[in-house]
Image (tube, rainbow, N blue to C red; front, side, top):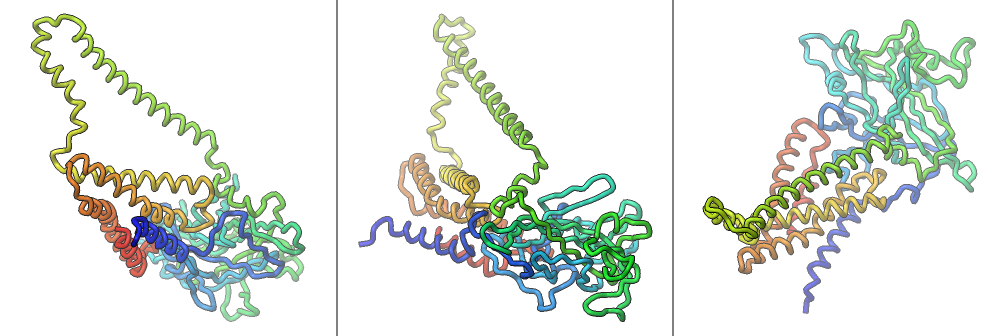
Length: 485
């Protein structure tokens, strides 16, 4: 005989199998560190480009930037990463632990025609105008962005770094064709010559390099107008052995930024710094706090203001309610006048309103039941995701974990939805229609959301955005929905 709990156990088993096939490993900062020895290759990966102006992320190789010699490869990703628009690829940058590099040439690529009035701009210029940003990853750590000007140096730990900028003087777009890749490492205690990455910062620059293709030799171009960091260190009067590209060198007299058009030489510096203050287990703290960009006092004040507003509105409603009830009870304690006798029926009718909350709605008791069940399902899903985030199971180092958790808990809380919807509908209609009610509860809200998702996915696909979910992933969603429903 099959027990009544067998279908529920089968459902839980299916969801656990789904979660295990779409995750690489259970990961909490401080549990699975990776150590490197000096000179070991360190992978730098590209994630999708995001914009602070539009909501459509683009593939990292959507624009004509440098590509790896061995070809473009997409990294293994889980279900949640695909749904949130992440597309992680390999990159042409070569990093080695504790090996600094100075103005290393990457490639020469053609960005398109020159920017002119009345002519449709090339794709790079359009991306710069839409304020798209690179999002790079080293050792599962997102890149921070360092910006420097004449007055200050700012490091931002969210949103990546811009692919270029638009000049306020001439209104033209310029590409950031040079980056300083700054990586902090921490020596591993108890392991000699082993190091762990604890910080990753990118400082972009726009440098107009001039070179001759015929002078390409030993992987380097002979730049005719090099800045100090791009000069060989073995020549008297050139750069110092440890002189990297800096804001002062880039903005020196006679230096110009690189327009986002034509053939462009991309270069990069790699700067390794020892960091004894930050441990591997704490490296995400500065990202979560955004380096105190918003002081904690502001968050507490916002919470306090919200609570005070809630209390004030609640007290206002209670005061109005008590005043109304007091007026009614006072009329029962004294002899009414002729005018009050005429209004007696009005008061009696008002006192009968309280019974209306137990009456089924005239329009559709089923719609009310489904709405209440779905609301409780969403509330429980939100509560479980918040608890998972608070205890550290859902964290930014485990990419896509938030969306996966939302899907899994929403499916599990379908039991709550079905129970509340059926019980409420039975109380309102006084008859049993459990199968019909539970079927509608399982398909009404998810069906509306899925229909909207298909329209949104089509718009993302037309615009070439990485938010467009592959067809196979949509089939997986449909299968899960059908099984749970």
